[in-house]
Structure formats: structure tokens, C-alpha cells
Length: 486
Image (cartoon, rainbow, N blue to C red):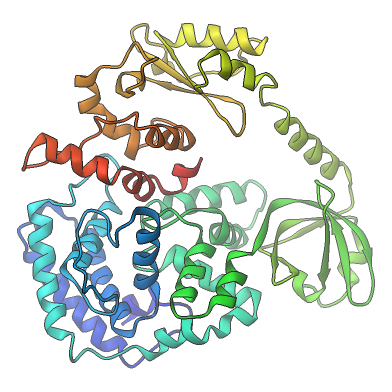
């Protein structure tokens, strides 16, 4: 039962767990005997079986996870599900074949980064039908996991910041719908980052978890954990609590100056001069003994329901030098954007996209408009004389980003390097891999500049292109996730 319970919110155990574990084992056997089994690793098969089981458990008890997803997808795209049509009598607390197809596809794509499985893949469809046949046959007799339903409906965890944060971690690391793709990569990166500052592996892991609970976009819609929590709460009628979750304000790891303290708490000043008032409990302190001894604190903070809390481990010091250095570095970063951004874009016909024959020409242009030579280094494989280059001047940061080889895929009247034949082969990579920055991709999608991006389809090339174009923003979100917003 551990595999089932490990994918529930913290502390949610139920007598029904044994039933759903047995069901997952049945589905795992079917997955291993399916026509698609040779294309699936054991890890893929296990995730498929568990995700379909947990989806079924979710809709049976109507905990709000699946219900909130289809409501949000409807809001964003005008349809309940990507890829698959649903009927007018669709009910979110009953299982459907189309749902199972999406859950299976998403489970498989958790492990695939170099290729994209067509959601209409015949093997996938046949497997989903087999799995759906089992859960549909169990629908009338499956037990309701009351503990899972009550977790969101009663939402007692919302009364305490740290219990609420555990609920956010559930969506990141455990939830059948929102965990999975990229999460292990994000976690490893954050642990490595924390290890540079903290010489204790357990604390580094704890800090990484706390960062993941708020900073990374997850799930098939690439939303923040607090957005997923808010959606689930709203789906079960807890609107006030949903608003509290969605309104949480977070501050990243940074130094704070201790301004003043008294018997009830103390005040910290951030590098942007915000005053943070904390109680000793909210800072994981018993009393003022630590605060009185130090001038500086390092940590992450969160404002929940009007109170500031420590979010992760903290360290203390006496030197204001670190505070002043970090503040100066942040101010310098804010000054990196081009002051003449508007003029540059205006001269380019109002477009932030600039096309060049090769890297050398692109670098020459950047040096010209910035008035200073580029000081960094570029990957050696970028320096190919025959490789076209796109520069994207970010409307938000006013900083250039470079995308070698992308111009041939971009259908833009200003682009002399667009090649429809090459775009049909390679434009998909711009959507699903990090070949271009997320902000640039969102611009390209919004302006219909990737009309050739296509999936391989046994129906026809045009059908594969239509399926991709109809769902292109969803593909970008679900496969790139956090990178989609960068």
C-alpha cells in the first residue's frame, strides 16, 4: 500500500488504500501485457498503473483535483480536455475513456524528453481502452476514499502555514496529475544550488523542497503549486481558502538586516527595503536569544494570511557587508536591460525578433545597439557559418536572447531564412524543447509564427499538423513546464 499512500497528501490514510493498491496491481499486469509494452520501461508501466488508479480514486471521491483541472482547461482553451473531445453529458465525478487516454499519455511523457508520443497513438489508445474497461467495471463498487475527500473539503491544513506548505509539496512531488515531468531535474538542481551555501545534505534537501513548493511551475498546465491548491479548494467550494492559497507572497533566499526586536517578535529589512515583521515562532525560534546576537539573517520568507514565516532553513551572521553586496548586485541586474529598447523595436517594425545569417552577424548587431562588446562565451557548436540565428529582445527584461538554427522554422514576413520544408521537420522542437526561451516561444505561438509544427500521424501529415496546431500552447506548457514561463 506504500505506493498508494506515498502519492496521497501527508497524513491521508484510508481503509480503501488496500483496494486501490490491488487495483493498481491489476492495471500494472495489463500494461505489461499490452501491445505497447515493448515500448515502455518498467518505471513507465508502474507510473501508468498508479496514475490511472489514482485518477479513478480521485473521481470516485471527487476530491477536486481532476475536477479543477478540466475546469481550468475549459477556461484556458474552451474545452475540457486537450486532444480528445468529450460529450455534453460529461460528469467530472465519473471515469471516461478520454480521461484515461490523457492520463496514460501524460504518464508516458513523464519519461520522454527527446521525442513526443502522438496522443492518438494506436498502442496508447488500445492500452487506455483496456485500463478503462477495468475501472469502468469497478465504478459501482469502488470504495470512496473519505479521508482524501475530507482533506480538501475540510482543509484543516490551511490553519497552519507549514501544514499548508506540505499540501503544496504534495502537488509537486506526489500528486498523480501534477508531479512527474521535470520534477527530478528541478529537485537535483535546487539541491546542488543549496549545497553551495549549506554544508549539510539534509538541510540542503529541505531547502530544495521548500523552493520547489513555490517557485516551479508544474503539471500539464504549467501552473504554480499554490495555483493548483487554490483550484482544488475552489472545486470543492472552499473559495476563501483558495484565495488565501493563491495570495501567498514568497521571497527567495536572500540576506535580511535585523532592524529591531521585542518580547513578541522582530523586524527584518530586505534588500529592497521591505519591512518584514515576524514572531519568534514563525522564524523557528523559541525566544529572542538568537536575534539579539546577530545583525543579519539569511533565508527564504513567505507571507501567508498577513503574517511572515521562515520558509526553509535560516543562517545568522553579524556582517552587513553581505547584505550590501547582494543589494548592489540585484540593482545592477535591474540595470542590464537596454534603455533604448523602444527605439530598437520601433526601427525593427515593432517586432522583437531579429534575423541574421549567422552568429557573427548577430553578435555584430548586438555590439552595435548595446554600444559594448559581448563579454561572455558561446557554445562552440553555435559558431557555424551557415547557421541562421534569431535574436529575441525580451519585452520584459529588455535583454537579447539568441536562438541559432530557429529562423528556418519561423513564419514571419520579416524573416528571409524561413524554410517551410525544414520547418515541417524541426518546428516541433521549438515547441517541446528549450531550443528557444519560453518568453520567445509564447510570442511565436501568440502570433501564429509556427504554423508548420506537426506531430507524426498515421492518419496524414495534415492531421498531425492540425492536432499540434489545435493544442500547441498546451503542448508547450505540459512538455516544457517551468521553462515555458522563462
